[in-house]
Length: 115
Image 1: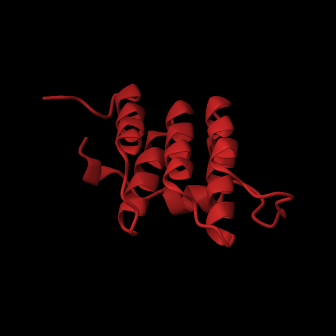
Image 2: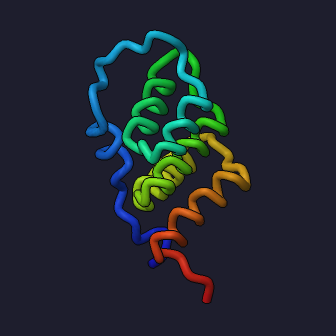
């Protein structure tokens, strides 16, 4: 499978991940999203990333990479890839960690092979 073949499911996944109306009691950080990754709670990671995007502070590179990793840890390679692709369409410049997290998610799911 090529990267361009993945459907754009990130927006649908993000908006279907839970109650968007919950009020955050405190500021969300990349550490919160990373914790979701350790727990394989990919929907919550996307929800927290969305909360950051809706707040006054936009997510930093670490937060986006943590969300990509959370999706990959939960074997949600399409969500990892779609988030990566969506961010590329903005002014976001991915780090090597973001590339690595995306490729790790694809590889773990058997969607990426070296030829």
